Length: 329
Image (cartoon, rainbow, N blue to C red; front, side, top):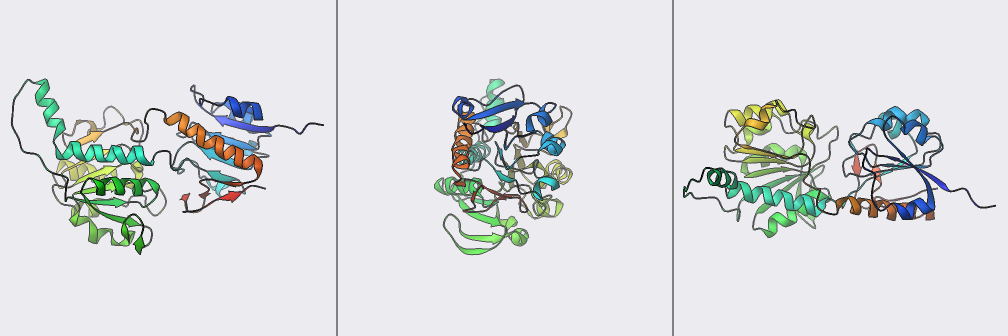
């Protein structure tokens, strides 16, 4: 008698993941939206959370009667780690690694655009106005990277290659780090932030990072310094940031993530001249969807073979610990 095929549920919106043909030959794949997810999860052993902005998994959780492994098509897992999942034996993996270089390039691009005042140049071009100006050089400027995961590391390497001095803040201090040399503890942020020309947030959203950039942090920044947030919106206290921007307390902010997404059309951040707003796209480059599926397919093969999975999330911490892997049983 032939062995029963693995049942895989896939939470997706109208856009299904590409390049799933091979997996569809190996498993019974049930594509579902939020409304149909409970039915799809009954009897499913694995779940691909393709619609990583959805919170439907928590609502459908009572139907997860055979689930052993869940993979999310994003690096952040904060929307997924509801208490019942954290307390369960279900292994969670994420898409760490897919977005590292794209986001690092995006951050460097933002910093160059800010330093070279490209926003003003484009505005003057539209007005057909010739106005000579001086701009800043990034060589020798100081970047403070908040978050030492794979995205933060890729960002630090690229900024250093551009000539910037890079300091890193992580959960714990360590004196010998392969990418940063030294990593400072998050408790040292107040001491480090006054020297930064750019404060770059790449950290995941956890209990310890929520709201860590607040009025006190902005008060310590240079009046010319910029905040760049490619982590999660809730790491920054938005009301405090607005006050710092409107009062000229800091130079500006380049934001790819927000408390509420999409950012409401009447939100004051849209209108501030010293703010760059982008729609949570810093890691989304040509081919990113196929890269996400390729990573999932590799993990699916590992899972079926009983081999250690890539990117196993420490559910209590909310991120992938370095070198963390797991063999499913």
